[in-house]
Length: 145
Image 1 (tube, rainbow, N blue to C red):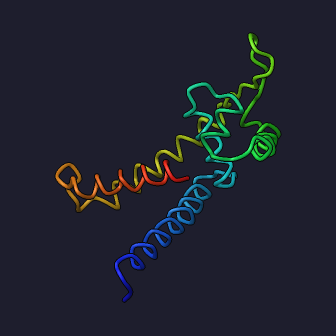
Image 2: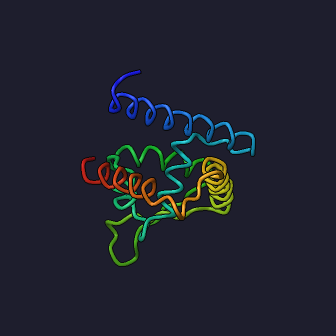
């Protein structure tokens, strides 16, 4: 066994990869025919305060060009529509279709079940060290990257 730093690094990478793999499998079993990247674009659109191309690209930490490609595919698949802002024609607003909202319900359900299952034996309301550690980790990534 390596140093605590090496073990933590290995565990974080392993957990991240497992989550993505399991999440993709679970969504496919529920009939979702989108990639995880596409689902995460839908999620970012839903969670943006104002769902403009610029805001969603920032939320995903991708270039506008990368998002344009992803959104184009989602428009073709009828999960997203885009239109110009009436007051500022430079802004492109994104809107989710009913199909996209249905996919996000399945996605949210997966996350709820994953968290419930992963932490069922822990008393999270009493485990402030774990919650504070995860919060610190999240803040580190937000600030650094």
